[in-house]
Image (cartoon, rainbow, N blue to C red; front, top):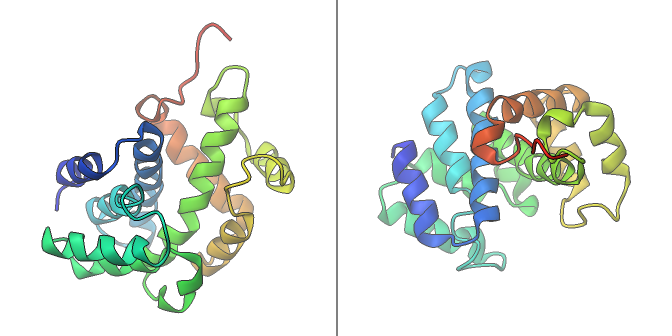
Amino acid sequence: MTRQQAWDLLCEFTQSEGLRKHGLAVSICLEAYAPKFQADPETWAVTGLLHDFDWEVHPQLPDHPDKGSLILAERGVSEEIRQAILSHVPDRGDQRTTPLAKALFACDELSGLLTAISYVKPTRSIHDVDVPSVRKKMKDKAFARAVNREDIVNGTAGLGEDLDTHIAFCLAAMQARAAELGLAGSASA
């Protein structure tokens, strides 16, 4: 499956612009990580786009991602991608055996936190986010409550990365494509 096909599938099942942008953010982080694991950036980008494609249709576990995986199989999505998506929910850590699955879990919640922090900056720009501000917001449980900090920490460890290094890596990937994510900021701030 190509990136465009994955985007079209995401848009077919997902009406929320925020959820579409989340898929794109995870895709961007995964695509950046692929070369570190001698992996195909296209495959990793497609995985990020599709990881939550069924969330609006199946908002409860285990329907998400189990029923979504069946749809992906019908659409010809590879076993590698489907297995990574199946393992991205927290209680399936034992199934995260591939670098792709580990990276998906590590990038999922973090990309959401980076986006949320960008939105509260006066400029609404991810360019004004840095590692210390992310670490500070991670400690603030009232901020972006839906973001599971434990998943960020455990995912990073599972990927074999230092937390600050992982945050900086994903932040740089998202900053490089800030306009695409709607996080380039506003001139009025």
